Image: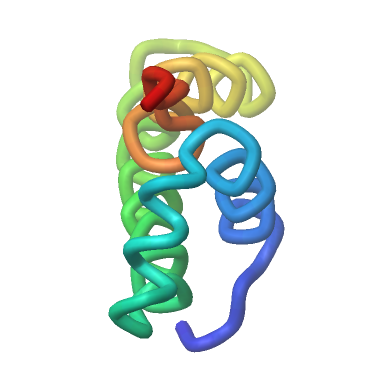
Length: 85
């Protein structure tokens, strides 16, 4: 995958607001887009696996998606706010 989709765009907005040092460092190294694509891909992959597993446990598609999102979103996309410098 080589384009930023909703998850990648969400991560970029969040990182720019809550992780400005991280963004500056990634931009300085020319790696921001790569990091965003990786976060997006990991999120999509993990969401797919979790949704499948949760469906096997009897959850509806929506319930499985919502629970998977709760489990994954802060792992790759919605990173913790950086402490002040």
